[in-house]
Length: 162
Length: 319
Image (cartoon, each protein chain N blue to C red):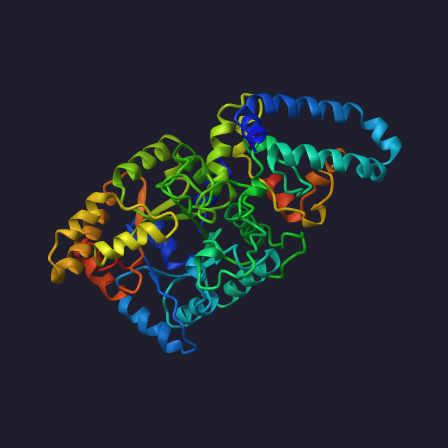
């Protein structure tokens, strides 16, 4: 808990760490593709799970958007919101559903303001989840592009808003 | 021209609410308490209380996660009787498949306004054992509704034979944290497709003015019709209950105190007077296009409130 708190209260450090990890994974992509993504997933997922659970209380949605949400896991919001806070935030800034917990999005917003690299991404409209990816490795899904695939209707609306 | 401005330029559904807003009239909508009944008369009895004092009537979708007659059913009954209903769709109880089907069906049944909501959590309702869905959130639901309307297709890309004509709405709560993000969250909802906004109960006017000032700085009031949520409080007890138990409702101490100091037999009138004063004040704020009156179980007072606020009779629309 205290390790997680400390880390989450240093969002700029975390976004740098994310940036580094992403670069590393992408650079090593030829290796992963030669190894096969399935095989990569088998050994990578336990590592990813362990790290993200300790650091972010990760819920393994398989479509990680941490860097776009103030390095705060949106799936820890009891409503699984990915586009910002609901209207039920309590007067003290705590969660409607879990009164003892600070609203995940109040924290996400505060942290995003301390993130010069990815902070603005909290304004992006996040697409619907692909629930088939739940409990798979978000790192592998990032490499294969599975986490970026959206339904045709969404993709069209996104490409050319009316 | 931004996407939102383009959307703003064209008539979307032609509902009475939309025509009223487009004509520049200060619009009035009200919420109908969804009945616990299988009798259409239960809906009409409440609707008749609102009479001709409002332009549109919202039918809640199991508000507070308490089960009542469904919003689609209420809106259909209202539409058949000549009212202009606003269908509330909450992401709490249905996934994207059910919601798309409902929106399409609602349009076929004559419903022209849809308010896209995330929804109160199941834990606040009368059936806290229920599974919460939240497959989408309000922002994603808005965009999914624009896909049906503007692209004539389902989210999947499968074509519709006839697309629904809808005025799309969303909620906003400027009164809770993170305050600085609230105008930006509104911008997100506009980008996702909101044509109009109904806010949470507006009792904290300084906060609302601050919010609207930021909204104007961002030019958002020119891209969306903002209706301020208001409602009468029956007593200081009702106010205390609401601000303690209804998620996201902020009521300043001054208002609670004012009701406390009022003699018992005059409390209801005082509550209505406070509501009227708030309407008069929000009306003065640039960028506020109307009010949404949420008089839970006090629908009978709505015509009085509208009249005292100088909003009656409602303007007659040509055509």
